[in-house]
Length: 130
Image 1: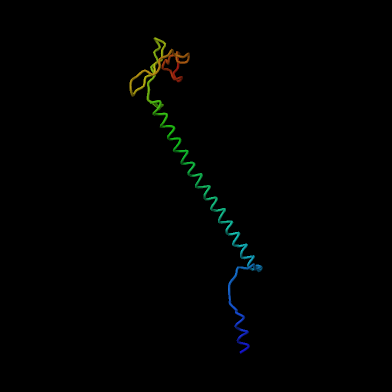
Image 2 (image 1 turned 180 degrees about the vertical axis):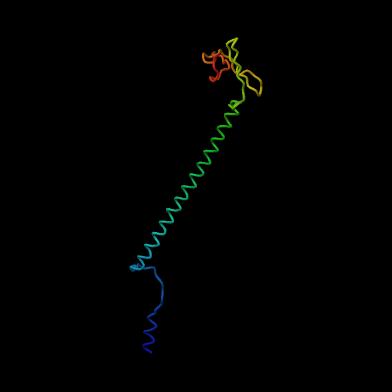
């Protein structure tokens, strides 16, 4: 019975505690491999983010350019376009008149330049003088 009384004074339980443990070489190697993989994943994610950000910045720039162009059109109420015209060289009046064909309006009237004053006599250089 004396032993029974002594056992009643000592109680043993099993518990788990978070304690410092030294890593083995194999555990260190495995952790190093996992660290290298995690660093690769981070670098790849950062590169993808940069690419996406660049794409969105390019899209924003395109939108801003379109907005600026349309804003100028609305403000100015005109734009420059390639327009079919005819140029009338009047050698009698020594004038050149530029007329747009879509509205038949006169765009510009001016004096003939020195080059333009040299009238075309219809020779292309291959005819022989008689």
